[in-house]
Image (tube, rainbow, N blue to C red; front, top):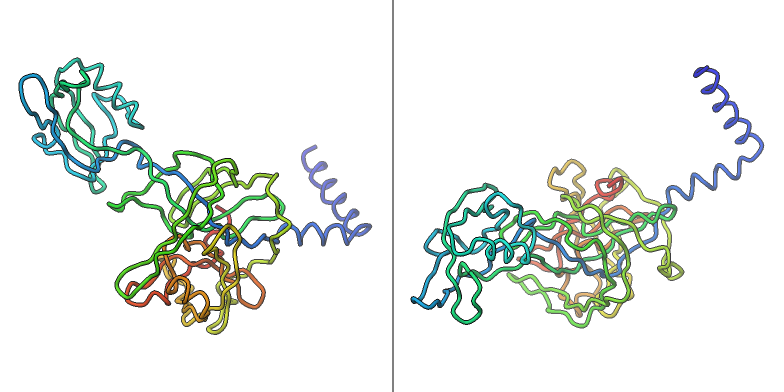
Length: 336
């Protein structure tokens, strides 16, 4: 019975293709079409716990205490749990400190890829009456990056083109699944020895998409169906094998919310690079160089097109030459 059903399915498909070949061809074409990105998006990520960004003192009734510092806590550590109970945000940590009632607690801390158990005793703050351990913390990190592509039939998008890490190179996780439209309001130009950056504002009433995956090649998810795609061009993707040294273009937003096309040159193609540095590119567009100095932070994910096809995305800038940078081959992003 199973063999009969399998054969019937093949037969029906064959008949449909014979009778309606144009329908099949059109469906195949739609599956391989991508909207060109280039728009800047804002996102919120987390290190999976509470990150320590500073140490301070606790003033209590009996004097000044520094519980965290004295216990060996360092800036850059990430608190994952208190007494075995998972801590995902600042609220969780405050609740755990309130429960302790001034008794010794055990923190599970992530540091440089390892975890450690650290015991300390919170001190009661004289002013607020709350138990504290003498730390400055954050539980999320906001950033901006560039959308690379949106698959036309499914609205699946890819962005950034590289892993997302905090200041200590720790991989981050998605904290807020919504990705917001971001307006670029200024640029700190890149100079030799110092990377520039885009300055943007989240437009919080206009979510672009919902994210569901962050990995070594970027941030991924689905665009909202209500988004206006009428301004976006569609292209097909091409493998690294089709890329050549020579002229190409990128799409990027360096002012406002709409991307522009800029000229670049691909100076090296390395299909086998294991760090996703498949291209070395040089910005040749004098307008872009005049506005940004070349490649700046926030432009990661800017789509690279050559011969009318999507071949990759900008990922990094050379610190010693902001007009040069790396790119990832688009085939390493598709499928995520």
